[in-house]
Image 1: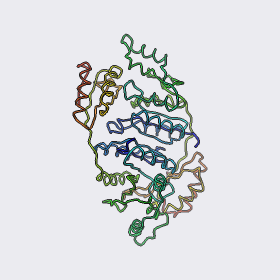
Image 2 (image 1 turned 180 degrees about the vertical axis):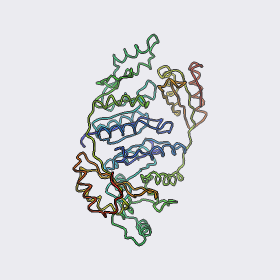
Image 3 (image 1 turned 120 degrees about the vertical axis):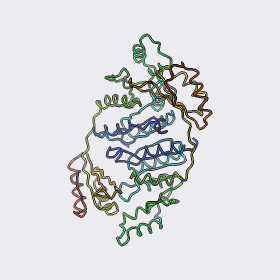
Image 4 (image 1 turned 135 degrees about the horizontal axis):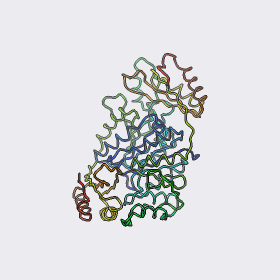
Length: 245
Length: 245
């Protein structure tokens, strides 16, 4: 498989045990969409070295950019740095510039041995300066190790996204009074004939709405979207379309 | 790895492209937690046969119960049944009782060839009657193929959960004025000594709050939670604890 787009790994015992509701996954999904960077997957997993190693290795096979959220603090449950290093077959090294930053931040207070873990990174890591935070973005081989705390995640994500580029997608949504079973043959045909156009079909089961199925048509080329929409509408009864957005 | 607990797979182009925000993952997380069924992972992936086959096979290695959300309608993008069958090494068969149900529901209207796809299932599938819906819960080998539409997902999930049993977890949360670096050595020690107790550490970066780190202590045995909390508090300065919940 071609390694394009992005994949996300949410490292979150606290999410999977319903202690907090994940905000970082939905935020990343929204921002990547706005920039036109396709997202292949979002995996939410436990704070477990083996699970993270496995998820990172798979994400790298599938996507060019990998974002992790969480597990980069100084406590026993912060194992992301070690797991990413293992997934890459690298050592964990202590970065002198981070040791200096930790001492500078602590001032006269001694930095604990555990506090110094914040200076550890997979070998070959690069630090990106983070405006508004003393803690830089930790990145290695197109893997971005972002913090799990939502406001820090958002800040660091913008630093990363400013360096990436995407291709925004053209999208048309069609709302039909027909059910999916009646639409399926036409959708199938156009989807098969036009592999570069993504066609989605989303039924609703709510009698208060004026439609039964929303069909989405999207592609990087506007002309392809227009052609697919023309073919769909040409093959379906005119009065079955409620509206087009 | 022992196959216990649950894993979830959200099949959702529409989620990964930010067209809709997933509600089913968070709802499943909450309900499983309430019942005390541990959740290993939630993967959100594209409506792609290979991706689903891979995710289902991995989920089954890790968890006893697998929940899928989405991709079980009659259109070209509904590939969950086929993918689950492939992951299990089974054929797809057409279930006569579902064909009858589809004809009964359609009344005098003919059922389209595509509509009949709703009667397809992996060989060995079992249908669970769903109160309030003509469409039953489709299940095979502890995999539950739930619909993506949130109100239908919730209805069918309850039918499944009524058949499972869990062990509710005891949880105590401690709020400290110390930072993570100062807490880490004590947390590490107790976490290492008490492997059946899960200890989580969650810093906040908000000066308007009266604490800096929330520590969670949980286990299936209340006495283990009490012992771990006692050890943590005994090893930390008394005035560093803001409150206990």
